[in-house]
Image (cartoon, rainbow, N blue to C red; front, top):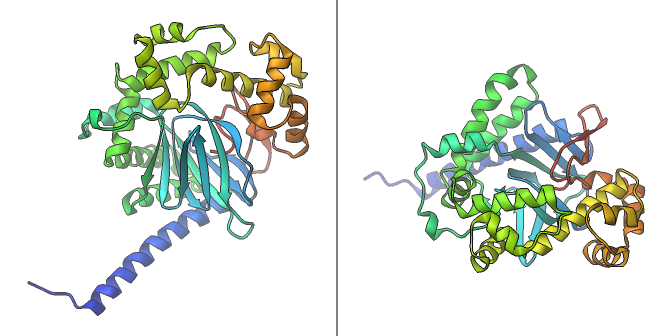
Amino acid sequence: MLVQSSENAHSDNVAAEGTVMRTLSDLIDKLLSFAKDDGIYRTPIPRLTIIRHSEPTVPELVLYAPALCVVAQGAKEARLDNRSYRYDAAHYLLGSVQLPVLGAVVEATKRAPFVCLRLDLDSMLVAELLELATLPDLRAKALAGLELGAMDDELLDAIVRLADVIHRTKDVAVLAPLIEREVIWRLFQYPESAAMLARMVTSGSRLREMTKVISWLEQHFGEPATTSDLAALAGMSLSSFHQHFRAVTGTSPLRFRNRLRLMAARRLMVVKGYEAAEAGFAVGYQEPSQFSREYSRQFGLPPKRDAERLRRSGLAEIVTVHGGSFDKEPGGTRTNHDDFSAQH
């Protein structure tokens, strides 16, 4: 047996660590060279977005959609009621269903800004790769809408190569789909991520049933549906529906609907210029006092003052529900663009 000396072993470890550090450094450089200022940047690659912040942000309720989020530098925290998900350069965040989440950048400076790459998941690609993957026992895996995972060298390498294609637009059509496929395949190699992806696209899974209900609520949040109506839509008993809905979203169905209403009303005020009472009625509230009370409890300020704060602070881009954000293009212009989160 060949026994490696401790000195040689140490040298190899340093080399390996150096490779990892250079890879992460490459990712930071590629993302920051594209996103030169704070904001949300669409890239030439479909469904790929870069987010940059030079200072920590206050917690804001934003909409997280099915996506992989990889942080190159800094850290962010997402909260689903009593659950907290902190993701940074060592941990990716994977989402399998659209959720209202309280999110905040918690580590960022002007010299080392928070920068994150977000890849929205293509359900058809996930379903295709599911046929080739070896899956864990899904019954042993917890049902949840968000999942943290540990970054490893192989996933990071694929992410860096995907970020590199952003700067070579002539290669996007050919190379980006291949690397995206590799990224999703890497996720299938980790039991927790594989379970989430499988449930996301498997017909009849509890996650798929919850996704159906959530999608319906996103389109009909202004309607007076009862929890029993939603349970019937999922094809489940009332008690089972409550249990699985809370497991995925971290909250009750009616509270989830209220959050969608409040986010939509916020957007109407900030982006469309609605008055507070007008926005409340538009999303399903019958009493202005109830709307104002629930809005203040959720966002920390009365509706009118909160809308003024967002416009005055240049934070209108966080108001992103239903066709609603202002993204920054590489040239520095902002365009209306469907997005699920200015903070994701």
